[in-house]
Image 1 (cartoon, helix red, strand yellow):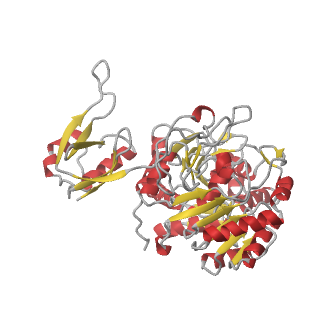
Image 2 (cartoon, helix red, strand yellow; image 1 turned 90 degrees about the vertical axis):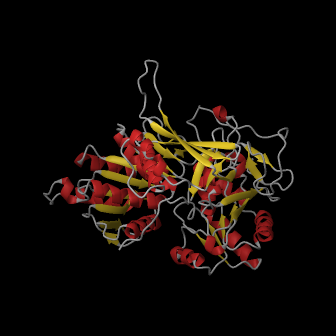
Image 3 (cartoon, helix red, strand yellow; image 1 turned 120 degrees about the vertical axis):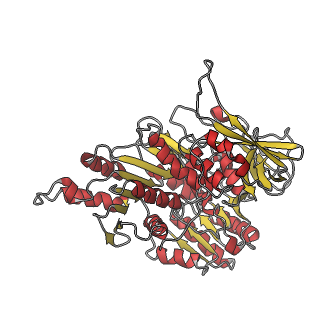
Length: 551
């Protein structure tokens, strides 16, 4: 038996956005953009299961670059669909299954397998029988890692599979739909063409925090400063050798670790990012000298997997790393992050801080505290509204930051109150302006209130053009009267895609029978619907948004 998961509202929307993209005539390769910790693996699992329920003969591959992600995604699929025809092709996981209808694979292992099979001259079989065969869809997790360059492993695998099926489609999933030197990964001639769903922006991000689906990240300025004024650039990133020399100094390490211990004493689970292998080792040694039970992981160690598992099981309070926990590391209890790795990459910056966005009720985690020794927050912005990279020659700028005078916490430039201490900001406070065309105020964190419902009215809502013809299917305008306030929502039974699903779910919450097919028939039966006793409303929006109903 499969476990029964009740998808969150945005997981449902993400899943149906893919179907809606193709049903509405989309011909490219779409991207689903969801912040770290919001359950991309659930969306992938439910999407695959629904595809096979509608089109049983499909053949799908899910590719990624880290064996841990392969394992996590495979386990999630089996948990929601225990009889899924799933195979895994990954050298790291010691599994080499090519023939199953669903294959989850590591990109390096898959690319080598295809290349090896095509070199076997004594094998007379056609290409589709030599390796993974006909594939209808490829899912790519952490899709921002796919370079538009044609000589990468991802591009090689896709090109070879397209020789077998020219109609092959690729669907990407990422928390950061942009890349250095490329800008948005849907720009220009990249593989991905459209973003079919995006909840990485400030409004959706803050809503998920308010609803408890994500944990708040609180980043404070540090006393320890890293001087990188003499560090040069290689391409769009800092010169790594010069950066290591600038960061890995005894006085900086001692001062930074001292601050970590002072701020993190009451925190349960620490992750520290070092700028080099040597720097990570030095930080770990210094933490241990301060009495912190810590370990370190990097590419020169052979037992990293064991150390990571030991950390997740609570054997260590802190884990220091160099580029091993930036992506694909899932550990909800993380409530303290220290960053000593300056970068110019917004994607890397967002991914690092994303390690702390998962909620952890089991450990009573309230938020995740961060010490940004690398000054990445000021340079690249808060993770719900970073300065996105632009193609060379298309501008840059400073991050949209406001620093609280009371407690020193970093906030988005448009924030009206401090995310840490709650003090109200004055609009005369000097702020850093955001880059380029993004220099406009964004919505602040959501204010959610409950209202008792006294009365509900239902009306036919139609949009008509100048000639009187309907420009879209009709809907039901539902008005909730709550004392002196009134809030509206629109129920779209006849619209395609996600609005229709939402409307059907709305009806089922109020009636024992299935919803009628048309708006007019539904209006004739509204007297049969039960009325909610109160509604939950996001009130500080231009048009207040009803988030939920209670009966």
